[in-house]
Amino acid sequence: MGLMDFIKKQFIDILQWTEDDETTLAWRFPMAEMEIQYGASLTVRESQMAVFVNEGKVADVFGPGMYKLSTQTLPVLTYLKNWDKLFESPFKSDVYFFSTRQRIDRRWGTTQPVTIRDKDFGAVRVRAFGNYAYRITDPKLFHTEISGTRERYSVEDLDGQLRGLMLQHISDAVAQSGIPFLDLAANQIEFAKALMEATAPSFTALGLKLESVTLQNVSLPEELQKILDQKIGMGMIGQNMGQFMQYQAAQSLPKMAEGNASGGGSVAGDAMGLGAGLAMGQVLAQQLSQGLAGAGASAAPAPAASAPVQSAEEIMALLEKLGDLKAKGILTDEEFAAKKAELLKKLG
View 1 (cartoon, one colour):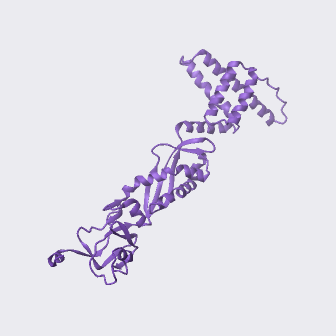
View 2: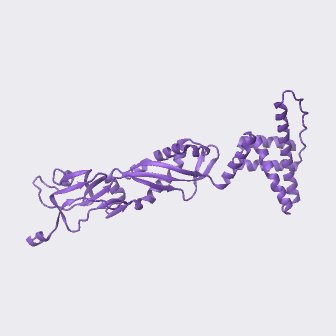
View 3: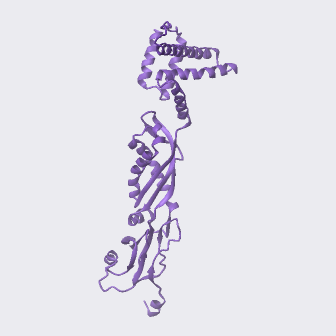
């Protein structure tokens, strides 16, 4: 290089990042055709880290502090460039600054229902959303895995990837927590903790630390929510499964009456449904009368009510209703099989 070229050439003697953009995670110092002066000052502020990259290879990493650049403070770069101890000339290197501040109030949520396995309901499709916070802890790994040689890498550039990681681990979090779905609303902190533990390793692999996770809401699909509402209504008369079946039958009677009033439905179908409902009602009446008789010790024992005679059509209707309850997860396979065997005996 000629003398005039050397005079015209600009050299950098101060390297720093004022971080005036709140959303920037990684920023490349603008080098253009300039070179870094030997002995230049490098300032890394609190909540920052700096990385020197030589020909695509990450060299030296600096935490917060002020440094005078020399072969002593740049040992890896010195080795890569084969400098001897007398090195005192300007040099070229890419310098990247990273913001290590905690990024709070990042949102995660299900755009579509996520299928999880629940011990009460089997496979359940749920929606959930909440917040999370993270920070860069390994700038070398973040540079090689995420930001690369870009001039600037922002929080928004990373949001989609991190939300995907959160959603990917929802099923794992439910399984690890062991919390039944019905108890999630009362155990949101425990579920959020399980979600954080399940997701944190994926953040670490990107040079990040997942600092916190919150769960704000979790909800069921509408059809399953209706079943839960019915179970809550039935709770007023007890938790017995037989009582819940009777409650379901009683719920169907007004709908049949409404159908008849509007002229809809077949006569045979209505008759079968009505017969099944009456049979259920009679069983309910028997249980209520027995409960009242047992409540009063001095009362005379009520005469035993004769079991209603059920037609084949009524029994088949009951089997259909039991099948619906089994399909909805209200009856277990064992309960359905026992009730089915009992009804089939009456057909014989």
